[in-house]
Amino acid sequence: MVISTISFVVSIYTHNKYIMMIFGILYIFPIVLNYNSSIDLIIFIGLYIALVAKFMKNDKYLRLLIMLASVFFISYNLLVFTPGGVLLEIIFL
Picture 1 (cartoon, rainbow, N blue to C red):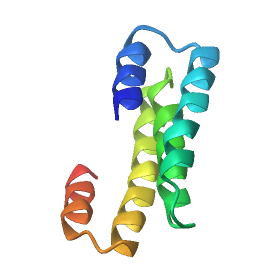
Picture 2: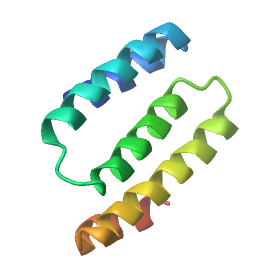
Picture 3: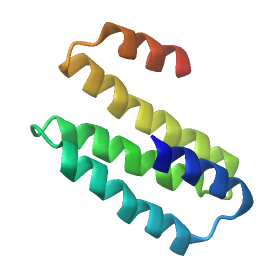
Picture 4: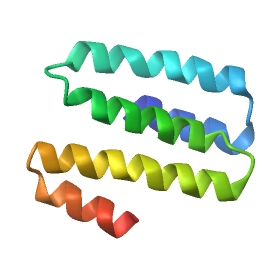
């Protein structure tokens, strides 16, 4: 969560792909430390799509990628039976 917040703030000021890759590498550590099952990979893919979206220069592509990431988040929340998470992501869409 902290890495995501920092990457969001940084992406406001720069769209540098190298900085995006640094955050992508940093995203790996929490996933590896908290990995329990293959379902966790769904959230990992969603996080990476959201990361790429944050560093997009074009607002149209940013919105499309965020919607795609939301589909992964909804899928994850459905699989782990969290209705609050599903509702939150549906409202976000």
